[in-house]
Every structure is written in structure tokens, then in C-alpha cells.
Image (cartoon, rainbow, N blue to C red; front, side):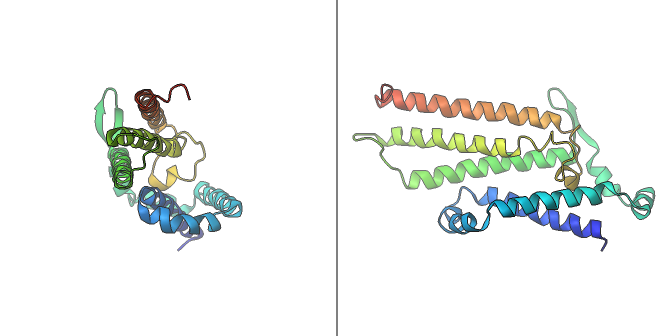
Length: 213
């Protein structure tokens, strides 16, 4: 395997681990077991090394070779080209390829999974934050708080689509130019989630007489 292929495979593993952390984030296992270990392991040195690794990958990505060009001429990238073909052409989505549609569906699934797990864990361990607080009021507070958590997920992915020279987008066959619309959609979605988070807490504070506190 060439140095470029090794760097690509290693970076895919790093990216997959990062995605897995987001999948596990709302679970009890992450909170009780993973968090203490990650806090002691993932320090600033780790993230500096990760950034340097991304730069190395970009170097290999931009350094084209005769063999890779020959492979493209032979049509060995036909599978990737097939995924990049438009499958949806309509407003307001615009032109969406099969690859983009797949990742969009996976992201929506991540949001649903995270919200469902956050609420499952939260409703199983409700804490009354004020004397005389009713169960439905505590659940309203919990839902409002978790909507903010889901908004954080949108923020975590917000700038991936518009990062020029990104070491992540080439891994999945996308470019920053074609992904700008996803940056806009993520921004709108995060605004909606944070607005719901804010409105939920305002209602909660109003019904529990905490507006003046």
C-alpha cells in the first residue's frame, strides 16, 4: 500500500472513531465509563498531533501520481462516480447526489438517536430542581435542555462543509464548494433547535415562578 493509501486509511479510522464518540455521547456507557478515560487521554497534545496528521494527509492528497491518474482513466473510480450522480433535483434541496443523500440521512438518524437516548436516560433519572415541582415540569425542563445538546451536534458539523483544504471532505468524496448548502442547512437547524431550547426554558421558568430569580 502506498503512503497516500496508508494515510487515507489511518485518517478514516480517526474520523470513524470521532463519529463513534458522537454516537455514544448520549448513552450511560459514555458518561460513566468513557468520559473519565477520555478526559485523561485526549489532551492538547493529542489534538495537535491530529491536526498535524490532517496536514500530512492533505499533502498526500494533493500529490497526484501517474498510477492514480491511470486508474481514473481506466474507470476504476466508477463506484465513486456512481454515488456522485444526482438523485434529487428539486427546490429547495437543489442538486443532491446519492452520496450526499446518504450522509444527510445518517446525520438525521444521529440526531434522532441522540435525542431519544438523552430523553430515555433523563426521564429515568428525573431530578426536581424546585420544591413542589411537578413531573411534567421536570420533563419540560429536560426536553428543553436536551434540545440544546442536539444543537451542539449541529455546531460540531457546521464548518466541515465550508472548510477549504479540508482533510475530511476528500475522504468521503465531497468538496467544500458543493457542500456549502449543508453549512446553511446546519445553521438553520441549529437556530431552530436553540430557539426551541430557549423557548422551552422561558416557559419552564414562567410556570415555576423563576422569571424574577
